[in-house]
Image (cartoon, rainbow, N blue to C red; front, side):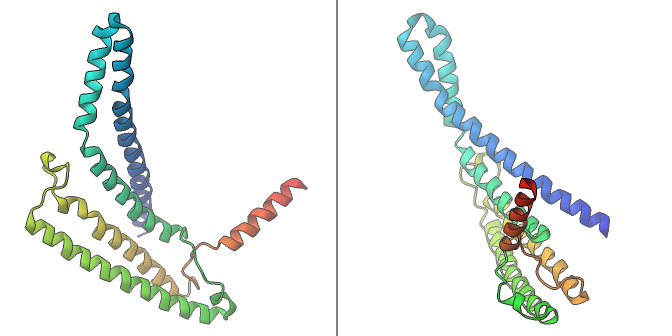
Amino acid sequence: MQQFNYLWGKLEEFMIAFSLALMTLVTFVYVMFNNLYTPFFDLADAYPSLESICIPIATFSMTIAQEMTWSVALTKLFFAMLIFFGASYGVRTAGHIGIDAIVKKFSTPTQRYISIFACLTCLIYTGIIMVASIDWVTALLIANVGAEDLQHFGIQLWHLSMIIPIGYFMIFARFIEIFVRLLQGKQNDLGLADEAKDAVKLQDSEEEHKE
């Protein structure tokens, strides 16, 4: 089980890095080609002797830019992957911000009961969205609608929409892990980030370095 959790965690990290890298790469390539042909056309106009070199480069760049209409849709897909894998990763690593100033005033057992209720609420919410998104993807599958700017690659809209139920399933599974640990008494809260505590630690660390 520990090995599975390790591999799952590494998969989350890989998909986050993969999505961010491809999103950046696709955007960079599109912007580069979309802005490359104008200088070469201007250069060919200014220096007619360079037309044989500049015009083909400018034409090639403009053609590539015009054909990359799929880049926006693909970037949106990678961005959605980044959001959902990042949300799951945030639950696992306590990356989400917690607003629990009032909760911390209660005793430890009371904090755990409140956290159990909060975790149940999160599970219910993510479960509802996950089931609803599965129904939505099923409807798109039946409708057989092509994805905008990607349909000529054989990609259907339901292919892209699969990231939503998959993402919410991953978030749901992470909250299940927290819920089990709460019931077992291994933790007393949702393990969310505490910005105030982090700020105090950072200030203490800076003061120690100054000394």
